[in-house]
Length: 273
Image 1 (cartoon, rainbow, N blue to C red):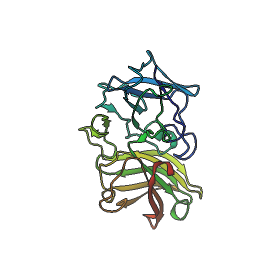
Image 2 (cartoon, rainbow, N blue to C red):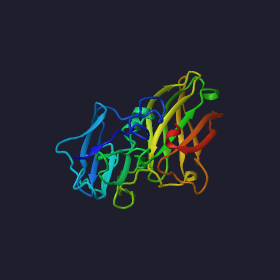
Image 3 (cartoon, one colour):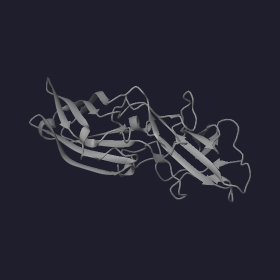
């Protein structure tokens, strides 16, 4: 019988702290697992171990190498195959850790033989960790200046296909296929985040590879007193730089004289938080 080893390192889809580097699978999390191109079988995490929902998976033999492919979170969407794994809907996010936890699509592939115990581990130590397929955007809004006593009510990010529905293909070198229904704006509204002189941090997941950063834009909506305001930023990075799978794009923002100003930005790996 094949067993799935624990993935205790990174990355995982469930965030237990305030940053993306605080992550661990929790009870009830589900992955899909395929062996040698067969149908995906749902496995559920409970009591610190993974178990198949239904019939167990048996090794065909103990000498040959076999190909294991897995994804998280499990989705029984119509037509689930190696070349068509439905990815989470990115169009409705609110910028919280809870919001991105269920949308952080992970994929992993590993070729191995039975070995000493038949356990298949998708971990960095084993050389085949789960990998983030999308891109993470971190927005830190400074609680001073025009925003010291403001309330953030909405954040809009625009860019070609950044939240268009997608599916993942293991058989096509992990390519992400875009749906014909293009969605070019992520609009998080009714946020109600009061600044009160402190910084506020938001996290969003976007499709990777669809647009160059200099072609993207962002709008921050906020209220101060009884008035409503919008501040816009054109261009989120350099020409030729695209959103890359597994990268985190951080922006520190402030508003001066009604204009959205970047006071700091960098690109690191997802786990940098």
